Image 1 (cartoon, rainbow, N blue to C red):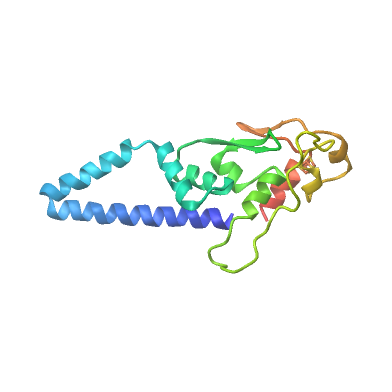
Image 2: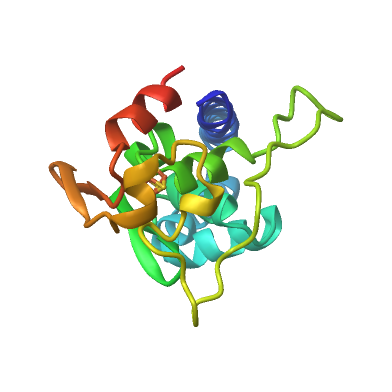
Length: 183
Ligand code: SF4
């Protein structure tokens, strides 16, 4: 949550400041500077946002969280799907999944994002390792690593459950996870 607010604030500040400066320059000088700045704006608007997202994810580094940040900032995608052990475990809009994860794996990914205001602090990590897909665990495949796991998770594989319009997750305790994410 804090990281997403930071990203959103930085994006608005950088984008707003750059746009204001360019607009002032174009308005003040007119003529060819105005023409060049207008062309830059045209190119930026025509540039495929997905390509922009790929470039941004490349700069930020190859991780699931950075891909989500890149998609959110560039608006290249409305929806994301989070996969674990070869299955989609959560789907929703980029903002919903980023702000209020409803699956413990997604929550763990979000909590693993470093806080730029707390340099040197130990990173939160998801304990354990991904399962051997030739012998997946019984029940929910995330249960050996899940801090929310209970007995039912060790025996019943959760089916994807609709949580709202365009939102679903495969977790027995999705509401509890979302409430935890809000803290
Ligand atoms: S179903 Fe249980 S083990 Fe699986 S993610 Fe949800 S709480 Fe964790």
